[in-house]
Length: 95
Image (tube, rainbow, N blue to C red; front, side, top):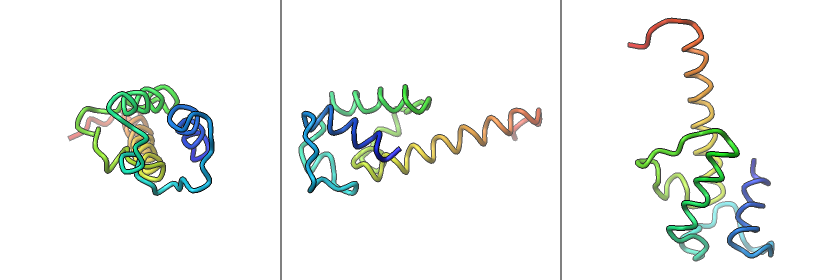
């Protein structure tokens, strides 16, 4: 996932140039990489690639402001989705 996300950022926001100084923890906002349109592009990529739904209330820097934060966010979403699907498969209603 890390490499896919880095490649997406490089291709779409760094114009295909891999900046060796761009680290996974670097803020997209502080580096000036993402504006509001860039966030929408990133969300579309995440939803398509990882089959998740990014809710409006999840569009916050804690989730989407660096490669590391995006990886953690996607991992949480995928885990929750898998857990929900497994729970639904049991036929036990949620309380």
